[in-house]
Structure formats: C-alpha cells, structure tokens
Amino acid sequence: MTLPPFHLAFPVDDLAAARRFYCEVMGCAEGRSSDEWIDFDFHGHQIVAHLSTNAGDRTSNAVDGHNVPVPHFGLVLDMEAWEALAERLTAAGTEFVIEPTVRFKGEPGEQATMFLRDPAGNALEFKAMADMGQLFAT
Figure 1 (cartoon, helix red, strand yellow):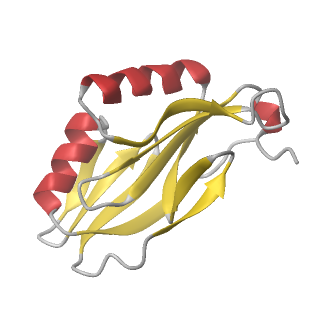
Figure 2: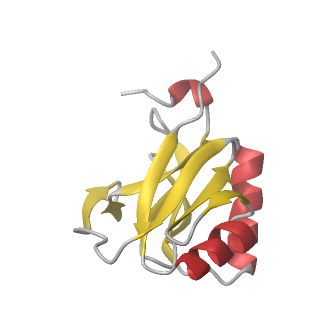
C-alpha cells in the first residue's frame, strides 16, 4: 500500500530557529517560505512552521512508564533509519524529552522510540517497529 504524504502545519515562535533545527539538525530540505511560514520536506511529507505567539496548551499522558508529550507528531521509520537518526540527534547534543528507548518490549507493538522538542517547544516522536506489521497491534 502506498500512502499519500501528510501535511501538518504547526506553530513556532522563531522562524530562524525553526529553519536551523529542521534543516540542519533534522536534515529536512526547505521548500517555499515567507516572512510568516516555512515548508519543510519531512521524509516526503510536508510540514509547515507558522510564526505564532500562541503555541497552545501542552500536557502529557503516561505510556509504558514515560510521560509522553501531547500534542506531538513524528514518523515511523525502519530500524536502521531510526538508529541513524538517534545517533545524529545525540551527536548534535539534542536534549531528549524521552531518550531513545524500546517500549512494550516483548509485547505486541514493541517499538523503539524517542521524543524531543523543536526550538518552539513542539514535541516530535520518532519510532521504529520491531515488526512493522504490528504498527496497529492491540
């Protein structure tokens, strides 16, 4: 099954910081931009950082012993890509909300995961499934 790219617009309070983080740290290519927004190629998906002073409410939920930030967005990568990204982020001195770890170990849906925040405080999750067929396992 081929999935269409998703589009996500999210608030940031500093476009220059967003550009540095998404281009230099995350390795995203920059697309169109203006004085108020920037498009990024997020592994084939379109994410758009919009300048805003109202980032909204931030909270968390307990998941397998960790406080997972809500809202958040991210990608499900293959394990090799996830490990490479974890190494890249660690080398860049990234402060993780949840360090690279494996959750639901030995259970349906076992996955490697990590959480971090962009410069505006938006939470991102990157995960890799031990078995991609278990992505929606209950």
